Image (cartoon, rainbow, N blue to C red; front, side, top):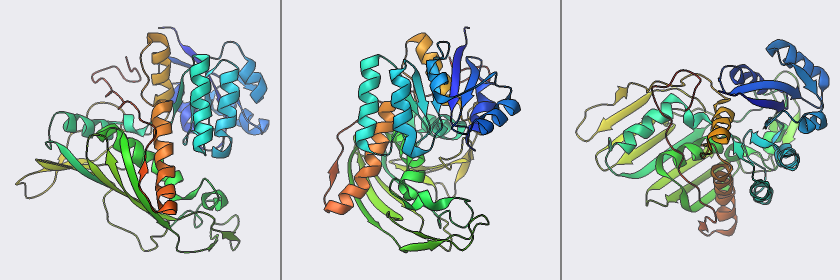
Amino acid sequence: MEKVKVGIIGCGKISSIYMENCQKFEILDLVACADMDLARAQEQANQYNIPKVLTTEELLSDPEIKIVINLTIPAAHAEVTLKALHAGKHVYVEKPLAVTKEEGQSVLELAKEKGLLVGSAPETFLGAGIQTALKLINEGGIGLPIAATAFMMGRGHEHWHPDPEFYYATGGGPMFDMGPYYLTALVQLLGPIQTIAGMTGKALTERTITSEKKFGQKIPVNIPTHIAGTLQFENGAIGTLITSFDVFGGSDLPFIEIYGTEGSIQVPDPNTFGGPVKVRRMGDAEWSEQPLLPGYDQNTRGIGPADMAYAIQKGRPHRASAELAYHVLEAMWAFHESSDSRTYYEMKSTCTRPAALPIELAPYTLD
């Protein structure tokens, strides 16, 4: 099989796992990386044996690179993605697809105009954990799915992150930080969302950094830090989602549970690729852990670009698509806009529920 040549823009912390895994998938050939800090790019290139260190402009003008993996900061996602599309490249971008709905729509429109593919993280829904839950649901293991709950409960990042300010600025907060994982998993398991009702709030107007680098510095909280809401899916199922940075004493709530007419299923942390997956059917006294499908149960970021590469070669849809990512982006804003207007938000976008990964393939192959 002919490999698809890939270049990475953005050599920060998240780039390491992409660089490692891109060299495991048989279809990808990671040939270049770029960063505003060329020394950082060179350091990553040395560590992962990447042949070329380029400026962003040089990487975008390199004719052999077919896919650009955009790992820049969220505020730059749309700008860099649009530049790559104008340069004739397919693009896979870290989450979120863009910061605003308007930016996201611009990406979708330009990709369609250019006949290019755009994909976006999170790709964790392609891991063995959520794929196992998907198979159980699709096979009727809990009957007809009728409801779901999802909880991301935490205290925020200022106690550990060296530069936590952006988590409390526009485009930050628990919904935009972790919401993509939960909403993407729910769409994979239940299908697209139709209506959202949300309420938002914040416990503190200012936070104190207690991580070492900026210990004691104060940061203003300019976004909601507790977002709660209800979703109605196109299939009629009703979900409840809470994302919070205001849970200071911890929580024992499950990550995701799906409830059906014949039982319930516990879905693992959607920020991971593995398990456990547990089922409790009508009449069962307790939960039973299910064996995971063969597949990707470790951190396999890079599977999204690999799936895109197969899609380019085979002419099939790719799973972590821009349409899915935009639907999730709109849903995240919907919670905030519903709260602000005190009305239901009717989703304008929809998407195709991603196809399940085939099983029994050789490791690091997807077709």
